[in-house]
Image (cartoon, rainbow, N blue to C red):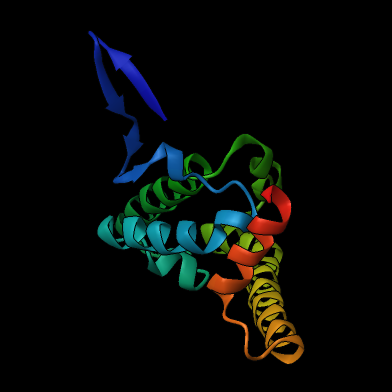
Amino acid sequence: MQQCFLGINVAMSFNGLRLEYALDGSSNYIAWKDRMEAVLDDNGLKDFIEADVPKPTDAVQVDAWQKKTAKCRRILLEGVKDHIVSILHGKASPYLMWKALIDIFQSKSDQGSWNSRINSETSNVRRETVCPSISRSSLSAEMSWEVWG
């Protein structure tokens, strides 16, 4: 997302992740996940999405743990579009938030890329099976001639 400030386009970002890269669904999940992991790693928070980090028993460490947990939750919430926030609502930890997103979008994203790969490969096989001697460029030139000729 870009905003205009004093005639200058400014890319909005938080903690190193540009808002235009916010998770919108399975279509941008893989790219979002890679970027989000990098942002969390830069902020020393990646441990909070890799496992449920237990609350320490030492009173001195509890304050630091609470601040890190809150920051990680905020980064995750700010890194998704509004319609995704409801998926994260009520999750007790950043790890459970992350897991919820993986459970919903990881398989859909993988399935989508797998389906497009299969469709691409099967269309090439069909073309080569029907007319193996015709190249793609000559076929498209011939089709153009039939349409416009």
